[in-house]
Image: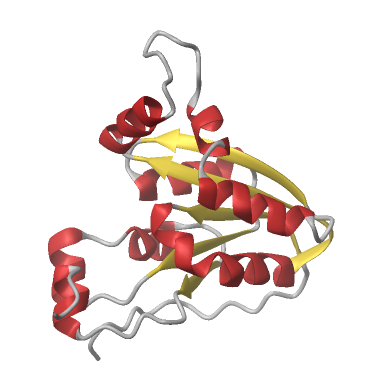
Length: 177
């Protein structure tokens, strides 16, 4: 089946205490869905760890955009806190009286997410993504797929509401004229 990712179905008996919400710049169009999903599975005293993973190039670009001196002791956590998507999600969740922390990581996104699961002792991961063809996943990889297959906890995949692209558009990342 084209574009289908299989995963194990896991029943969640109890509410989640610690949720890892992995985000990137590509999640701008699904912030409401991500916040709603996170809030919907948290227990009364649950907390959300928002993680923004940067690859080396994007991290350097973001530091430059923020005028951060390369010798400064600014961390990936500091850069992530200044990220619009992460900050907006944190605000949306805090408005619901949910405890939120924003973290940053530099390196491969899937590896960073899987490490963070252990670091924060997450009970569940929520990750955004978009539909891709099997060829697109094979050629370019899929962070969400790597997390779905590698995480030791349940993973919820949230896609954008308006991800109505053709297979060619999904593969190339370009819209038709």
